[in-house]
Amino acid sequence: MNRKGVVYDAGRVMFFAWRPDCHPDLVRRELEIVAGDLHCAAVKISGRDTGRLLHAGEIAAELGMEV
Image (cartoon, rainbow, N blue to C red; front, side, top):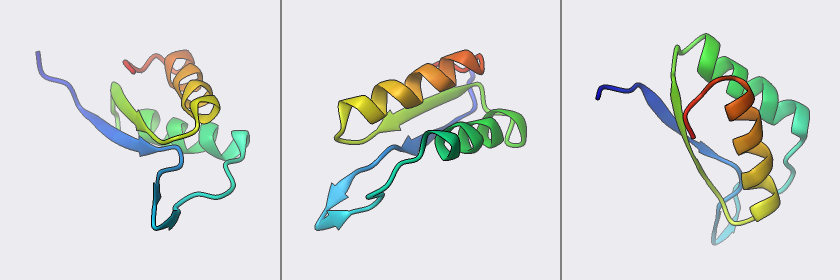
């Protein structure tokens, strides 16, 4: 199967927090861009905070993306 997708960073920590603030509206807008403008059907979500991972995954699923 051939899929087009990206890795979405929901907040990794390597020496410092890459994304100390993660606003739900921003996550939705970024994933809308990935799905709509970049025409990606799949997304791999990375991060440490399970709440952020779950939230981003739910949004991606709502947008019809494979998570």
